[in-house]
Length: 164
Image (cartoon, rainbow, N blue to C red):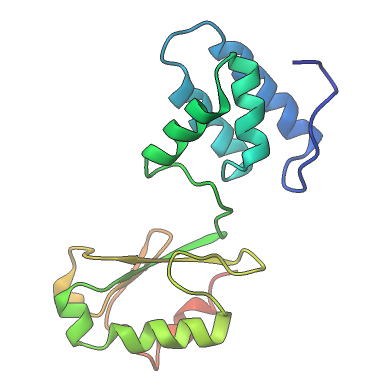
């Protein structure tokens, strides 16, 4: 890639582009390097916007469709921005029966976010998961790495307000 000549993207600084360029250079010509390059680029930006996928493809001399195919195949890659705080709400049977749906409604009403979305200010990304393996604490929510049990609609906002 031409040094100092990077595409414009509001979430990617010149410093990030330089780091991304270095990652691509390391992966050039190495069979099977695409996943590693995607992972390291996502660590830089937080997600993989289409501009970045194009840049990676050009840098590695592979088609953008191949890069996109790999990025969408693996669940640990994200094509959309994630929030600073990842909120995973369990909707498994025990949590559902104990009222987690009401907590989800409260989250949506308060922060304007639905499952699979990120708030406009990128404070929260909301994920609905089938089981968190903590049925004894139902209903359960995990924020980043913090497990919160007995999360009713009356407590959920108080819990989330502790996270910037």
